[in-house]
Amino acid sequence: MSETLNSKFILGTVQMGLPYGINNTKGKVSLDDSLEILGHAFDNGIRILDSAEAYGNAHEIIGKFHNKYPHKIFKVITKLPNRKNVDILVKVEDYLKELNLNQLETLMFHSYDSYQNNIENFNILNKLKSEKKIKSIGVSVYTNDEIEKVILNDNIDIIQLPFNLFDNTNLRSDILMKAKSKGKIIHTRSALLQGLFFKDLNDTDNIVQKLKKELALISEISRKENTSISALALGYCLLQKTIDNVLIGVDSLNQLKDNIKSIHHKIMPQTIEHINTIKIKNLDLLNPSLWK
Image (cartoon, rainbow, N blue to C red; front, side, top):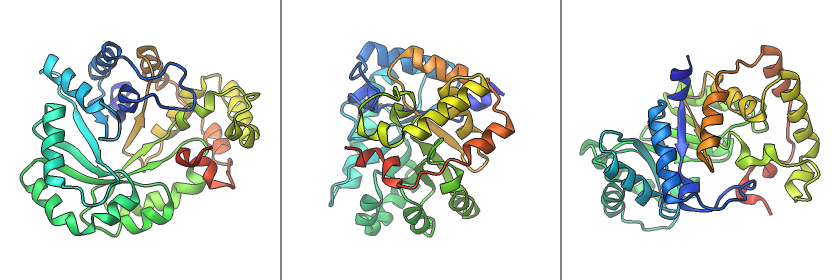
């Protein structure tokens, strides 16, 4: 069971290329630590990485890993920049060279706006698919309205969206079932909401204070469940039948080991029901790009 669940994880690489996350006090992960994290992930059944041109030198680090360990080749999802008039053919060739790969697992639009700006480029994307330069086409979105529009496009294979203890089935259940009925593969991100779930409730951070009641409830549920918040958060995502893969990001090897270990905990059905009662009214609080 754990091996199957491990393979549901996608390892994010933004922390390898940039200092990232509300709870990140260490900054960018070093090259040596990044290579160690990648090696441990591969050895424990994680086969997909999530990256992007916007993630600093993350592509280069993955490429160095592939060059150093040619028998440990990851499938890589990467994202086009949000700029208009991007030469997709040139970008894909650059990405393949940087990543030391022959094929991208998925070429993804980094936002709904980027997707809209490239509607006329799907003939190029389908050509890249036919040439086996990319396997799938995807879009990273935030809102249910964006998902509604994206699922109408038969050229889109994968939708990446936020899903977690706060951004939960209350908000996402119906749209996820609709997306699955259209044959879309669902990847979720923000399982740990960039580390917000681990923040001290007395932290003066504006977002922490606005979500203090809900954060306290998560702590209470994890105590009753006798498990860590990370195990609760990841387990909740992994148990969703409409979710194919769950994206996780780590700042250290120990964090990755803890995440992998946490999936052995089986969450009780009544705990799932309790989590499903959480309803955040101000949805802007669930979008890290809007945090101030």
